[in-house]
Length: 205
Image 1 (cartoon, rainbow, N blue to C red):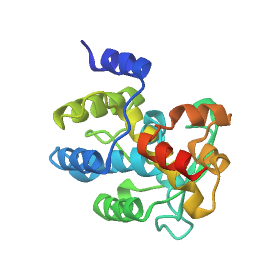
Image 2: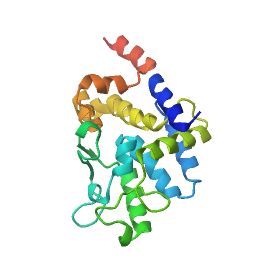
Image 3: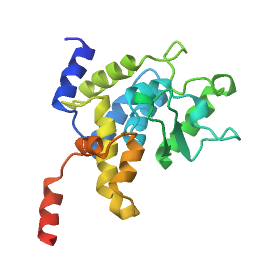
Protein backbone atom coordinates (compact mmCIF):
# COMPACT_ATOMS: atom_id res chain seq x y z
CA UNK A 1 0.00 0.00 0.00
CA UNK A 2 1.36 3.44 -0.93
CA UNK A 3 1.98 6.00 1.82
CA UNK A 4 -0.56 8.36 0.24
CA UNK A 5 -3.20 5.61 0.16
CA UNK A 6 -2.44 4.81 3.81
CA UNK A 7 -2.99 8.47 4.66
CA UNK A 8 -6.25 8.73 2.71
CA UNK A 9 -7.64 5.68 4.50
CA UNK A 10 -6.46 7.14 7.82
CA UNK A 11 -8.33 10.40 7.18
CA UNK A 12 -11.52 8.36 6.90
CA UNK A 13 -10.82 6.95 10.38
CA UNK A 14 -9.71 10.39 11.71
CA UNK A 15 -6.06 10.65 12.69
CA UNK A 16 -5.24 10.17 16.36
CA UNK A 17 -4.34 13.00 18.71
CA UNK A 18 -0.75 12.79 19.96
CA UNK A 19 0.09 12.72 23.66
CA UNK A 20 3.15 14.61 24.92
CA UNK A 21 5.21 11.37 25.00
CA UNK A 22 4.07 10.67 21.42
CA UNK A 23 5.28 14.10 20.29
CA UNK A 24 8.63 13.57 22.04
CA UNK A 25 8.98 10.20 20.32
CA UNK A 26 8.17 11.75 16.95
CA UNK A 27 10.74 14.52 17.51
CA UNK A 28 13.30 11.92 18.51
CA UNK A 29 12.80 9.94 15.30
CA UNK A 30 12.81 13.17 13.25
CA UNK A 31 16.12 14.06 14.89
CA UNK A 32 17.73 10.96 13.41
CA UNK A 33 17.02 11.90 9.80
CA UNK A 34 19.33 13.32 7.14
CA UNK A 35 18.24 16.85 8.04
CA UNK A 36 17.19 16.64 11.70
CA UNK A 37 16.59 20.35 12.37
CA UNK A 38 14.34 20.66 9.33
CA UNK A 39 12.47 17.46 10.14
CA UNK A 40 11.86 18.48 13.75
CA UNK A 41 10.52 21.82 12.47
CA UNK A 42 7.96 19.91 10.42
CA UNK A 43 6.71 18.23 13.60
CA UNK A 44 6.64 21.53 15.51
CA UNK A 45 4.76 23.37 12.76
CA UNK A 46 2.03 20.73 12.94
CA UNK A 47 1.82 20.28 16.72
CA UNK A 48 2.53 23.82 17.96
CA UNK A 49 0.99 25.89 15.16
CA UNK A 50 -1.61 23.53 13.71
CA UNK A 51 -0.35 23.94 10.16
CA UNK A 52 -1.64 21.66 7.42
CA UNK A 53 0.76 19.70 5.19
CA UNK A 54 0.17 22.12 2.31
CA UNK A 55 0.91 25.09 4.56
CA UNK A 56 4.13 23.58 5.92
CA UNK A 57 5.31 22.90 2.37
CA UNK A 58 4.54 26.41 1.10
CA UNK A 59 5.42 28.57 4.11
CA UNK A 60 8.06 31.17 3.21
CA UNK A 61 10.45 33.15 5.38
CA UNK A 62 8.42 36.30 4.68
CA UNK A 63 5.62 34.68 6.68
CA UNK A 64 7.71 33.99 9.80
CA UNK A 65 10.20 36.89 9.98
CA UNK A 66 9.66 40.49 11.06
CA UNK A 67 10.93 43.64 9.34
CA UNK A 68 14.30 43.22 11.07
CA UNK A 69 14.78 39.67 9.81
CA UNK A 70 14.11 38.11 13.23
CA UNK A 71 11.60 35.34 13.90
CA UNK A 72 8.27 37.07 14.36
CA UNK A 73 5.95 36.63 17.32
CA UNK A 74 3.27 35.40 14.89
CA UNK A 75 3.20 33.16 11.84
CA UNK A 76 1.42 34.85 8.95
CA UNK A 77 -0.32 31.94 7.19
CA UNK A 78 -1.34 33.80 4.06
CA UNK A 79 -4.42 33.04 2.02
CA UNK A 80 -2.40 31.88 -1.00
CA UNK A 81 -1.01 28.87 0.93
CA UNK A 82 -4.01 28.10 3.13
CA UNK A 83 -6.82 25.66 2.38
CA UNK A 84 -9.76 27.46 0.74
CA UNK A 85 -7.89 30.74 1.17
CA UNK A 86 -8.52 30.82 4.93
CA UNK A 87 -5.39 32.72 5.91
CA UNK A 88 -4.72 33.47 9.57
CA UNK A 89 -2.11 34.63 12.05
CA UNK A 90 -0.90 32.09 14.61
CA UNK A 91 1.20 33.18 17.61
CA UNK A 92 4.63 31.53 17.42
CA UNK A 93 5.11 29.10 20.30
CA UNK A 94 8.39 29.80 22.18
CA UNK A 95 9.76 26.34 21.38
CA UNK A 96 8.94 26.78 17.69
CA UNK A 97 10.40 30.27 17.71
CA UNK A 98 13.72 29.00 19.08
CA UNK A 99 13.82 26.18 16.52
CA UNK A 100 13.11 28.63 13.69
CA UNK A 101 15.85 31.00 14.86
CA UNK A 102 18.37 28.15 14.97
CA UNK A 103 17.25 26.86 11.56
CA UNK A 104 17.60 30.36 10.09
CA UNK A 105 21.12 30.63 11.53
CA UNK A 106 22.08 27.27 10.03
CA UNK A 107 20.63 28.11 6.61
CA UNK A 108 22.41 31.44 6.31
CA UNK A 109 21.34 34.61 4.52
CA UNK A 110 21.52 33.08 1.04
CA UNK A 111 18.80 30.54 1.85
CA UNK A 112 16.50 32.69 3.96
CA UNK A 113 15.39 35.39 1.55
CA UNK A 114 11.70 36.33 1.93
CA UNK A 115 10.50 34.23 -1.02
CA UNK A 116 12.39 31.06 -0.01
CA UNK A 117 10.41 28.26 1.64
CA UNK A 118 11.20 27.59 5.28
CA UNK A 119 11.11 23.80 4.84
CA UNK A 120 12.94 22.96 1.58
CA UNK A 121 13.53 19.59 -0.02
CA UNK A 122 16.90 17.90 0.39
CA UNK A 123 17.79 19.27 -3.04
CA UNK A 124 16.98 22.80 -1.97
CA UNK A 125 13.69 23.42 -3.79
CA UNK A 126 10.16 23.53 -2.44
CA UNK A 127 8.54 20.36 -1.17
CA UNK A 128 5.21 19.13 -2.47
CA UNK A 129 2.42 18.83 0.14
CA UNK A 130 2.28 15.09 -0.60
CA UNK A 131 5.94 14.86 0.40
CA UNK A 132 5.03 16.23 3.84
CA UNK A 133 2.15 13.74 4.06
CA UNK A 134 4.43 10.84 3.07
CA UNK A 135 7.14 11.99 5.50
CA UNK A 136 4.68 11.97 8.39
CA UNK A 137 3.32 8.54 7.51
CA UNK A 138 6.84 7.07 7.37
CA UNK A 139 8.04 8.86 10.52
CA UNK A 140 4.96 7.94 12.56
CA UNK A 141 5.37 4.35 11.48
CA UNK A 142 9.05 4.36 12.49
CA UNK A 143 8.05 5.86 15.86
CA UNK A 144 5.51 3.07 16.36
CA UNK A 145 2.56 5.50 16.38
CA UNK A 146 -0.34 3.60 14.85
CA UNK A 147 -3.17 5.59 13.28
CA UNK A 148 -1.13 8.81 13.22
CA UNK A 149 -0.35 11.12 10.32
CA UNK A 150 0.34 14.76 9.48
CA UNK A 151 -3.24 15.48 10.48
CA UNK A 152 -2.47 14.11 13.94
CA UNK A 153 -0.25 17.11 14.59
CA UNK A 154 -2.99 19.52 13.57
CA UNK A 155 -5.63 17.66 15.61
CA UNK A 156 -3.29 17.71 18.59
CA UNK A 157 -2.85 21.48 18.34
CA UNK A 158 -6.58 22.12 18.02
CA UNK A 159 -7.53 19.70 20.80
CA UNK A 160 -4.94 21.06 23.24
CA UNK A 161 -5.94 24.65 22.43
CA UNK A 162 -9.60 23.86 23.05
CA UNK A 163 -8.88 22.13 26.37
CA UNK A 164 -6.81 25.05 27.63
CA UNK A 165 -8.80 27.92 26.14
CA UNK A 166 -10.51 28.79 29.42
CA UNK A 167 -7.14 29.09 31.18
CA UNK A 168 -6.13 31.83 28.74
CA UNK A 169 -9.51 33.56 28.84
CA UNK A 170 -10.12 32.38 25.26
CA UNK A 171 -13.12 30.70 23.65
CA UNK A 172 -13.78 28.05 21.04
CA UNK A 173 -14.13 30.93 18.58
CA UNK A 174 -10.46 31.77 19.19
CA UNK A 175 -9.54 28.15 18.52
CA UNK A 176 -11.55 28.28 15.31
CA UNK A 177 -9.60 31.32 14.14
CA UNK A 178 -6.25 29.73 14.99
CA UNK A 179 -7.24 26.62 13.04
CA UNK A 180 -8.40 28.61 10.02
CA UNK A 181 -11.81 26.94 9.92
CA UNK A 182 -14.78 28.70 8.33
CA UNK A 183 -17.24 27.22 10.81
CA UNK A 184 -17.01 26.38 14.48
CA UNK A 185 -18.68 23.03 13.74
CA UNK A 186 -15.59 22.03 11.73
CA UNK A 187 -13.37 22.95 14.67
CA UNK A 188 -15.51 20.90 17.03
CA UNK A 189 -15.06 17.88 14.77
CA UNK A 190 -11.29 18.09 15.23
CA UNK A 191 -11.38 18.12 19.01
CA UNK A 192 -10.72 14.79 20.68
CA UNK A 193 -12.88 14.14 23.73
CA UNK A 194 -11.36 13.46 27.13
CA UNK A 195 -13.48 10.97 29.07
CA UNK A 196 -11.88 11.82 32.43
CA UNK A 197 -12.39 15.54 31.86
CA UNK A 198 -16.00 14.89 30.88
CA UNK A 199 -16.60 12.96 34.10
CA UNK A 200 -15.10 15.81 36.16
CA UNK A 201 -17.22 18.32 34.25
CA UNK A 202 -20.46 16.45 34.89
CA UNK A 203 -19.65 16.23 38.62
CA UNK A 204 -19.24 20.00 38.72
CA UNK A 205 -22.70 20.70 37.27
